[in-house]
Amino acid sequence: MVPTALPRPAVRRLSAYDVLRRLPLVLTLLGLLVAGIYILFVTTPLPLSGNGSWRTTTFGSAIDDPVDFAKTFLDAITFAGLLFVVASGFTLIFGLMRAVNMAHGSLFLLGGYIAFDLQQYFTNAGGFGLEQVDAWEWFVPAIVAAVAVAGVGLLMQQLFLRWTQGQELRQALITIAVSIILADQMIQHWPLQDSLAWPSFIGPNNFAHIGGVEYAWSRLFILGVAIVIGIALYLWLQRTRTGMVIRAGVDDRNMVSALGVNIQRTFAIAFVVGSALAGFGGAMGGAFSSLAPGVDGQWLLNSLVVVIIGGMGSLGGAAAGAFLYAFVFTFSAAYLPTSGLDCCTEYSPIFTFVLLIAVLALRPLGLFGRPA
Amino acid sequence: MAAQGSILTVSGLDAYYGSAHILQDVTFDMGAESVAVVGRNGMGKTTLCAAIMGLMPSFKGSARGSIKFFGEEIVGKPSYRIAGLGIGYVPQGRRLFPSLSVDEHLRMISGRGGDGWTPDRVYELFPRLAERKRNGGAQLSGGEQQMLAIGRALLTNPRLLIMDEPSEGLAPAIIENLIEVFRQLEQQGLRILLIEQNLGVATSLAKRQLIMVGGEIATETSAETLAGDPDMQRRFLGVEPLAH
Image 1 (spheres, one colour):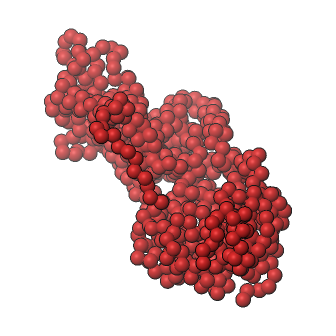
Image 2 (cartoon, helix red, strand yellow):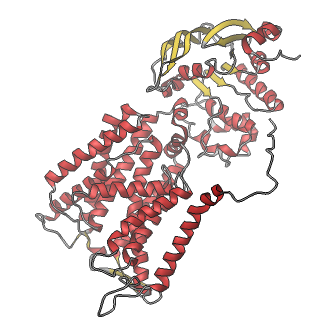
Image 3 (cartoon, chains in turn green, cyan):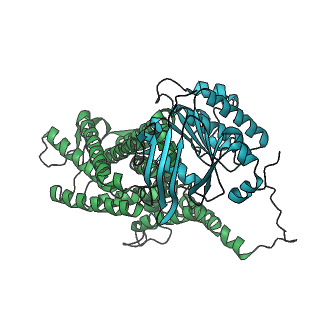
């Protein structure tokens, strides 16, 4: 077939449509520029006396206070590490099964609580928060939690999701139901706020010194674990036959099945790995901040936003989404004005949604997303 | 030649997408000879492939009736089992995996069928694929994509190869090449169920021609009869008569 050329107008006018289409890009760049200038040069720390103004932030500008800027930067990168671990499990399950697992946050919290209980058991702490423990008293609970949560995920997939494939709404409702049931059961067993202790070699009193910046080892440890997990997942998906089947299944799972591959088994494997990542993430998150009712919903939202930004089903997208989300979240918490008592740093979560809107306006399928 | 007797027996096959009745009482028998199913667009040819391969979506569609492969009932079996019994599938539009390279397409499947086809043998059959091992499925030319789709299906070590419109969108020279390859494969004992709109391809590959109209096998004829009967071609296929 020969494409027929459409008649072109002699003069191409800039239509209202063209202007509107470029508006998201222009606004995004403008927003980045303003935020960058504000953080780098404009802000000032709180004066010793009197109220702050719109320029007042916790640390002041990056030029005046490079150490706190660098710390904020490291906070963002390390938070991104934790986000990536949890969200990569979410995106793995979604990419292959086209099922949004709304219980992912519950799996995270459950993993954290299981690790917490085990750590309490090993250390005979009897419900008291610990400062630090031996290395194995963190690693063993974390790994057991990952395995246990993987079992819960597999059970959920085999009992409920296996029979409802291709019915996204039903699967979403089923997993929401599971998350509510899990949340209630967890409140019953762990009604208060709990926190895991880090192994003694990484915290809480051990600090790394990076070019004049003192920084907590525990957060760097999270980043290290995230990098190791990221590389392992990448190699698994790229080099192994299971990984190839998973990638092919993301593209066209019926075709994979018609080639004699039992895609159901692959679904189960993906669910096990995805759930294990949520469980392990929960153990890290339980030491990073704390475990409490409601944290499950928060981490479901984190995973959703990260994966929507990065593009559903893409590992690289999960990494990129985690970085962007963590940077916006951390920097808006540190560099929003603190002029009054109630203003404005607690509004930082709003900016993650501004990020979401900007990304979706520019790339509706997310940064690395491909049509299903 | 391969053993006598039926390879594929389809009887009373009905298939639905929702309430749309696509295949209506399709019945045919395939012996040791390759068979071509011809017909216009929308007559149910691709649905027939989907029904045989167990690919009718379980939620919105369904297949009823009986399909026996070497005497074994395959309706209701999951498609990976059907493929495992020895039916290879080259779908319409190739359906390669954009995320996988040429080599990965082949390595993903190899080793599952024991001895028989290996990636190396596929590269021997299609040397052009060997030159493009690292390329992605979407970066290939139409002919190369078709070679990869065939090679991928061969790695399941099929006894029957179902090909849905393999000549679609390919240049005549490449189609000639593919027909040569199909003949070679037939000589090695592989049977082919060919779904085609291109009469030239269909009639040069299979003696038996099944004509599908409105979800039914309207009639069966031979390649010679169909090729030599412009009226029939016009009536069933709505094509301009085959030029000789």
